[in-house]
Length: 225
Image 1 (spheres, helix red, strand yellow):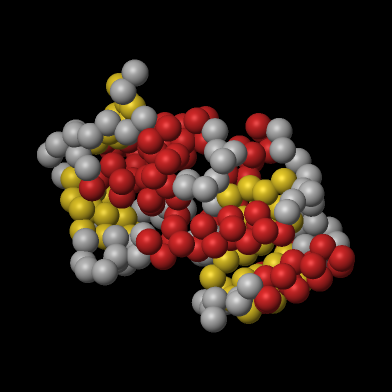
Image 2 (cartoon, helix red, strand yellow; image 1 turned 60 degrees about the horizontal axis):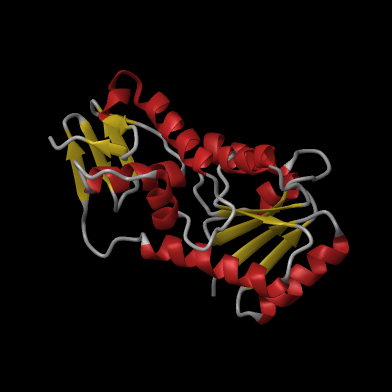
């Protein structure tokens, strides 16, 4: 049974979420703060439903901590009353996989939760896959990226974008295509979100940032080796 960690400070919303998600066939752990969420996060956690406005550590800070410090790629769905473009980008920049605005329909939330879990399951390889482009090595099974023999830490979405490009050298991917491939069933993802993720990948690639190219009017690509 997949385990969902709910981090929500409103007791009524927390209870409603836990009740409905339990009834949908998942196991839930519901906590009221990011600090408690960190304590209850484990290798069994399959997905995190994370409120943005929390007492103490915010949802964005929680996400950044587990992504950047703990190197944890558990999928995150943000729950928030904020829905402006800057708020959406802040969520995705923090490592979120989806963003649901309050108030929300339980049925829609369950559908989005299922879609995110399905995407992660669909990207799990059934056989060894290693893509190499010059000194860049992407191991799909181990979820690792090596550059000049040294490990590069990417968020899950950054890893998925890089894998998509490396698996299809010479193929152009527009922002719309990348969103369709990697953010299925997430209707609020903006073109700018793709640019932000690409910029972060390039920054982490350092002197090899030009591996990822962009042709205006066509999209992002990696040249054939």
